[in-house]
Length: 181
Length: 209
Image (cartoon, rainbow over all chains, first blue to last red; front, side, top):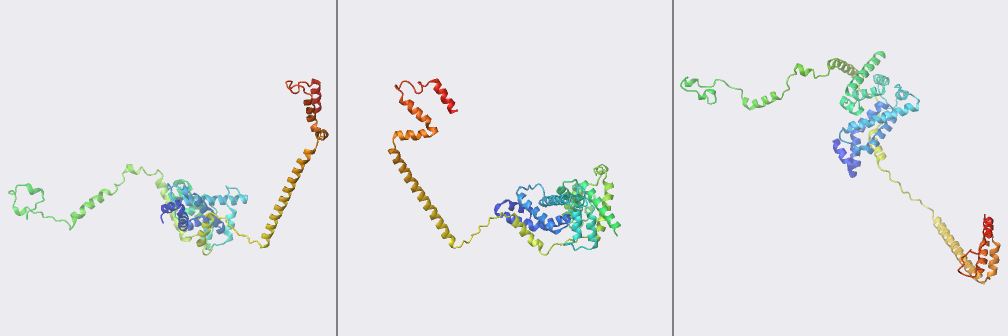
C-alpha cells in the first residue's frame, strides 16, 4: 500500500489502528534488521524496535509529507539505536567517544540468534572496529542498499561526506580481512 | 506517368520530353508514416557535451571517480564472501511483533474487576449502619432533653444567684462592674463612662494588662 494512503488513514481516528497495522506489516522487518545490525543482540533490538514504533504511533499524526515516510522511520530508528548504545556505554562507564563498545563485542560473542559462518563473523568483528557512524553508513549502504541521497536524508549528513565515510569503511574492512586470513 | 508533386510541375512542359517527367526514386514502405516520429526523436536527444559544459562537473570528479570504482570493486569482493549478516530471529518473531506493538500503543482500559464478597458481609454492613443510626438517635434525643432542662432551670434562678455565679468567673468581672455602673446612672443624657474617674480607668487598664 502507498505510504500516502497509510498516512491518510492514520489521520482518521476510525481507521488509525488499521493504518498502523499496514505500516507495521510494510516496515517492521526493514526497521528490525536496521536496528539489529546496529545493536546485534536480538532481545535489545526487539526493545528498540518496539520503542521506535511507539514513537511512530505518537508522532505520525504530525508527520509532514515533505520527506519520505520510510526515511522518517529510519531516522527515528537510528536515533533510538544511538540513544540505546549511549545508555549502554554510560552504564558500563565507557566514554561516549570510545567506539570499541564492550557491550557489542559481548553480544557478538554471546552468539544468540546468530547463525553466521566464519566469514560473516569476521565481517561483524571488522564492523566493530569502525566508528559508530561509519558502521551505520556501511550497514545502510551495504545491507539495506539505500542510496546516498536517502542516507543523507536519514542522517542529515552531506552526500560527499557519506561517500567518503563509506569508502573508508570498505577500505578498513578490506584491510581487516587481509590481516585476519 | 507524370509526377505531380515535384518542383518541375510548374515548368514549361515543352522543354523536355514528357516521358522524362517522372520521379525515378522510391522510398521504403511506410517511410512517410514514421518520418515524423523519427525527426521528433532526434530533436529530443541531448546534445553532446561541449568543452564549456564539461567544466560544469565537480572539480575533483575524475579523481573521486577512481576512488569510487575501487570502492565498488572492494565492495563486490566483500559481497562475494559475505552477503548477509548471519543474524537470525526466533521462529514466528515477526508474526507476534505486530501484535505486541499494537498492544503497547492501544489506549489501555482500566479493567473493572468485580470482587465476590461472602454473604455474611451484607449482614455485617447492615448491622453496623443500624448501630450507627441508633447511637446517633440516642445522643440527639438526649442532648435535646438536656437543653430543654437547662432553659427551665435558668428561669427558676434568681438574679442574685446569677450575679454570684458570674462573680466566681474572672472573665465576668467586667460585666458585673458595668452592671453596677449602669445602675448608678441618673440621667440618660450623661453618656456611658462619663462619670468614670481617670484613676479608675488607669487602674482598670493596669489590671487588664
